[in-house]
Image (cartoon, rainbow, N blue to C red):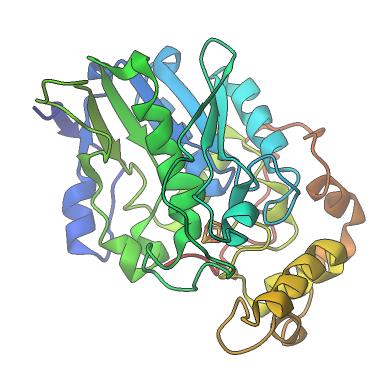
Length: 350
Ligand code: SF4
């Protein structure tokens, strides 16, 4: 059984016909017991939350889920401030935030040597931690995720995010016999691969109609048809201050050391966080294999230049490298400013 569909007025003139058709429908938000929003801290995941609130979603049914890509292990890939930014968003909108992670994060998976993939741990609604998995067959990676749209080779997204959300849902009895909606912020404009994503479909954890452990779980990508200017406009209308990385000049925010990072992004990270950058360079030498196919990470960074916005704002660099979001997270639409990274270099997963 699919949830009832209703017309979504926010969709406009998108170049992809399939996306336009898909984006013209939206689930009936009142029909879900739980609405789980995957909040990376990037503008699109924040926009997905704002879009749902605009659509009248009941905040009491909304919960934010942030997947910590470093998995509480040594800081390696992620922005130090991202968890703090997500906490600030949660507090500003009065919706709960739950953290979940692959134990040891991407670094542990990358260093897997004749071992199983690690377990997943997540915060429960009762305030405890639950851990599942980690008992699979042994395997070896000792290499970086591949820079490709193929999620089997670009394993970071599935190991640190997609499969973590799956584990949260499959191992939480509260979803049994209930209807849940998983909301993610992919947009068609980002890449041809993302343009092919469906806007609305059964989620991978859906077991509706089953006799054992049935649960109804849909997956909605509510801003799939939005253009970047519409995303920024959502943040402006709600007066939400974007993640500090955008203010430093980054056009896209997810992992600080994303495998898709452009030369300018890498040059900026090397300038801001040289030890972090060097961690990746050391692994390149150890694996005998570079992150980018054509050159070592230092050579790629040499091709770029640190963003002027970062060079000019040591206070923002300090915020990005801290764990507590101390500035205001909301302002008035009149005082809101488009960040330096808007409409810029948005290198990211295809
Ligand atoms: S942001 Fe980049 S490195 Fe991080 S999980 Fe996504 S594709 Fe992988």
